[in-house]
Length: 78
Figure 1 (cartoon, helix red, strand yellow):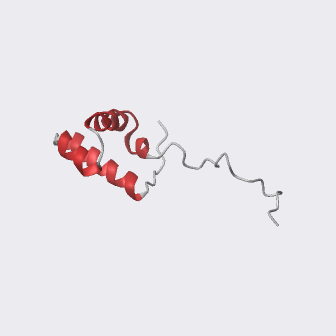
Figure 2: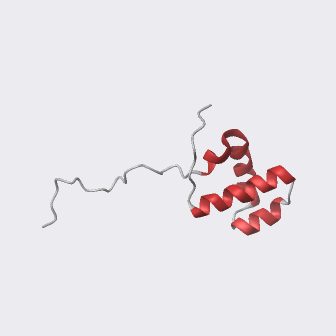
C-alpha cells in the first residue's frame, strides 16, 4: 500500500476526524450525522470508505482535475 502524506481541506478534515472518532471509540452515528449535516446512510458509506482507504478516502474525487469548461491558454479573450 502506498503510504504518502495526505493533506485534507478543512471540510474533509472535519469529516475524517468525526468518522475516525466514531470508528475508534464506537460513538453514536446519529450524532455524527447531525454534526456533519449528512444522512445516516452517508455516514455508513464514509465508515466503509474509511476502513478501506483510511485518511485518503476523504480527499474529494475531482481534486487535481482540470475543469471541462476551462478555456485553452492560446484562446485570447481580447
